[in-house]
Amino acid sequence: MSVVPRIQGKTLFGEARWEVLTQRSNAQGAWLVLHAWLVIAAAIAVAVVWTHPVTILLAILVIGSRQLGLAILMHDAAHGLLLSNTRWNDLLGQYCCAAPVGIDLHEYRRYHLKHHRFAQQPEDPDLVLSAPFPISRASLTRKMARDLTGLTFAKLRILSLLAVIVGRRTMFRSDWCLIVSHAVFAMLAALAGAFWVYLVLWLLPMATWNMLVTRLRNIAEHACMTNEADPWRVARTTHASWLARVFVAPYYVNYHGEHHLFMSVPCYRLPGIHQALEDIDLTRQHDMPQASGYWQVLRQVTGATA
Image 1 (tube, rainbow, N blue to C red):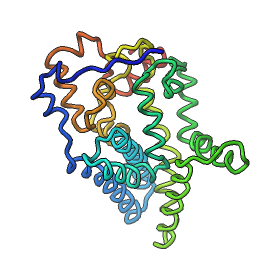
Image 2 (image 1 turned 180 degrees about the vertical axis):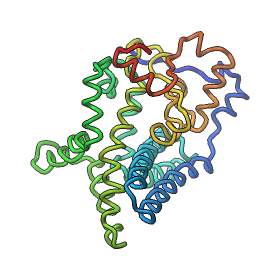
Image 3 (image 1 turned 135 degrees about the vertical axis):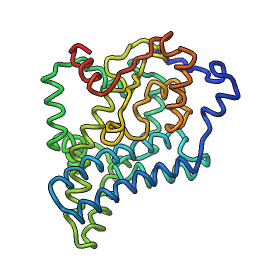
């Protein structure tokens, strides 16, 4: 059993700079959650007021990426980084981030902390996501097609719920989160006289674009990384353009190498951590895995030339 060692930030950067780099802000954490919901609301409003295939398509892409964004902010809450008060951190993370996208914060926290402890090791509960790579382009294309057609969502969520109904597995709290959240969204849309909004602008993004960008995130983070317990090389940082941040990688999720090095750092401080490592040349010295963008990641994990 190989536990991935922890890196001491104070030792690398000095106590004063480390305090600045890791400082938590309740206002910033709350703002990011509010920002996610404001973007979702704005996308829905535009598609409703100017209903057109183009506005609906853009809304699906934006909302699907913000659904991933809610999961990312839930992830920060799982680390206790969203708010400084533990109770309010968990309440905001559970009810405003996790539950709306069918996740239970407490279930997630239990297995996710194990992922950090054993990243890329046989005991890593997320190893199943990265172990199959590299794969062929044809295989990746088939997986992405299943994401965009809703087949992945049907398999992971709908068939999973059917397994509960027929008694093949027990009900988890995340199952209740999924059922209740969709019931609430459907009811609100129906009361507003626009049930199609729930179907097209919440369920459809979750079943399609959100599945694809979640897969891209998983691939970029750990696919084709070392299986050695080297904290500098178990995760990849992917540089993201503003367009990628809008549609694929919201809320600094692309700084995953830095997150694994220092999991006590809030997501909005990770760019600063990255720059601090660059300033003292540690990214080069430790050969930290980095990609110039998500296309480069896909080329790497399919065996194509980077």
